[in-house]
Amino acid sequence: MKPKFDTLAHWHMMGKNVRVRCFNGSVFDGVWDDWASELDNEPNGECITILTNNGGIPVEFIVDEIESMTLLAERS
Image (cartoon, rainbow, N blue to C red; front, top):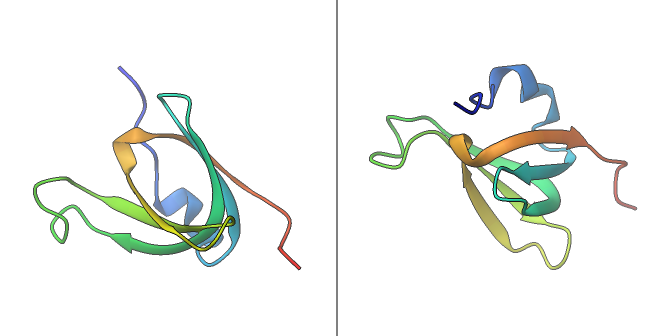
């Protein structure tokens, strides 16, 4: 069983430039822009949204898809 991504432990990264790595091997870089609780995003579950660094395209991730999130250097 894969571990659940702990949003609360990563909350300090909200609004920052991050790298999201998914269990399927996908990697996305961008600014963590939004969060929705499990109740607010029924039936899909808790999710986060980043605005990608290549054009600001919003990408939504269900937290169960996220393997890790790391803080990147701020964009200039």
